[in-house]
Every structure is written in C-alpha cells, then in structure tokens.
Length: 252
Image (cartoon, rainbow, N blue to C red; front, side, top):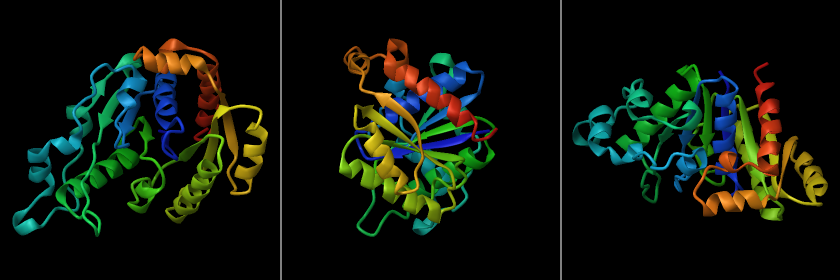
C-alpha cells in the first residue's frame, strides 16, 4: 500500500493537506492510517476528530516496559506491532489516527527508550502495515536526519509563496535523497498569480509540481468554526482532490 510523507516549512499547510488527503483516499475505498508526527499535533482537527487522542510519548510506563531496560540500556527493537490497534482512534470516513507526540532531546540528541520506541513504530508502520499511510511530518528537515522516512513511496513538499519556503523544499529533497526517497511532488499552497514563477524555481531543485492549491477563505472559516476543511468544501478542497488522484498513480 501507498506510504506518503508530507513535509515543508512550518505554517505552509502540511496538516490541512494531510488530513484532507486522508479523508479523500478513505472515501475512495482505501484503508487509511494517518500519523501525526508534527509536535504541534493538529492533525486530529484537520481530520474532523473533536478530541485529539493522547500522544504515545505520554504513555511512559508502556514505553519503559517495551523499550527500556536496566541501568539506562534501551531495546533497539521493542514490540510495536499492536500499537496501532490499541492506540489508534477512528474518525470520520473511518480514517485511523495515531499521534506520536514529542521526545525531549538533550544537547547531543536523544538516545532514550521513547526515541527507540518511536523509531521502531515508524519502521513497522511504513514497512509492514498494509494500509495507505499518511505522515504529517514536523516542519523543516529534522525528521529526515533520524531516518524515519525510509520506505516512503512519495514525499509531498508543501510550498507557499516566499523564498524561505522554496529553499526549505530544496533542502528537504537533498536530505531525502540521501535516505533513498526517490519520488517527490511539490504542492504550491495559497497560490496566486506567482504560481508559475514558484514552479520554475522548484524545477531548479528537481522538484515536480503536482498540484496548486489556491488561497481559499473557506479554509479560514473551517479553522474558525473548528471543522475539518473537507467538511467545509471550497476551491482548495477541489484542488486537493486532483492531487489525490495524481498521488494514487505512484503505485499504479
């Protein structure tokens, strides 16, 4: 089944795209698992789930039991094959959501049971679960350094007008290629007349644009009313529908 990672600079609309794609693919008949790997943890609202499930990193006893060990030693391959079933929450259109939470890191990076647990879970979800998996990643490129996106079929990079967003997309592609991600697609969000200029700049990084989402006041209203964007509708949602059809071609 298709595994999709959605990345980009903070605030560009990754979560809106993640939640809407998940709902659309579920409506198309696919079994869909949405993973909230962004520390802001807003994917539940984008899916239309009123109460966000408790992040996995808050289950300290479970993590210590599965990944911990005596004298600070931790297990590299903890048991995780039951986590989606036990902790996933089913929302509208039968999309299942799992919220990872955050791992506190020291100055030299985190080597701890929680980090080991999440890495093992991500490997299991990407490589062994027979579902469409959509990963709403943290902003920027940090997650790529931890190798959690190995096995991804396509990485969608959300870009909005602005030099920093485009430069971030270029860095994401550079690092992702180092861990063998081969397929990328850019989604230009909040696009206006400058969409064609942005597309040219992205091609300079070797990134193909697979969709353009116009600025849509309906998305603002959805946020104000605390409803999922797909339930509000509008031109942006219609654009994401076209993107979902292109994404499905990746696996054939």
